[in-house]
Image (tube, rainbow, N blue to C red; front, side, top):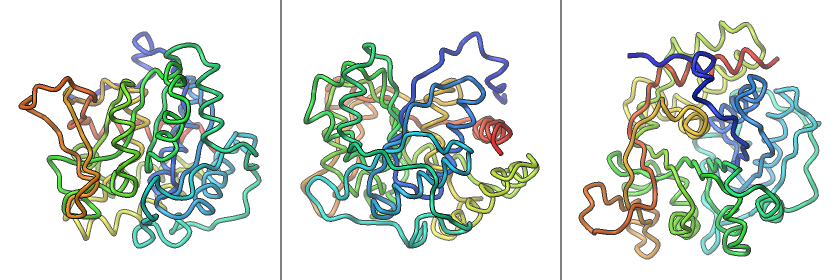
Length: 328
């Protein structure tokens, strides 16, 4: 049965305070635009964006985040630049998927949204330390370098986190950058391992679920039919992006990875999964960044994440469409 949109479920929603940590990235653009639309719908208090190197280098990701805020007519929105490389490894990018700038498929401009002077990690630490306990939802949708550094440098800042809802990892699906590993966990496996072992409440949106949220032609047409500039722009971006994954994975359309994390933070009833123990491989080059998921509880270790495997994809894309209707 198809889930209703959020407006018919308002009684069951509490407005979350949201920070997105991101490496834009085409599907990151969809996630950021969705978050701005959700804020205008009164469903989130969207606090800030922190950028990290990942899909492309930090120069591009921090610039792209600001361009996307311009598109949303949010040129005063705070954007912070963070880590330029993983904790212990050299940076691996995904330019073959997202293009040299990270946002292939659409015209770009010099951003009006300014880059904030503080480092992203310093901003995260300060914001979380001064927040009410358990009040802020972090949505990392790139490598986890910024989040790991914040938790390592200031373990006490974890008190401000309500939950980390992240996109990364794979178990039932194979990896998308190596046979064993999903891109975000592979780029900085040590950061992923640190975050998953932090003791903070964590929900993981792996390839296991994002490969069930496919960018089909009818769904792109629905974005165009919003009649908004951003609806058409996002359809163009996703069309450029989805061709790579369609050819690689043989899916009906490219998977919409990163908006799954935003949607799950706000609409958890659209998703299903299981609490289980998860570790990340950091030693073997053969399986570096692989997610080791104790799905059946064979280790006897206490669960440290909620591992998501199911999504109402039609409802997810409808929430994305509803959010585009709020933007220019």
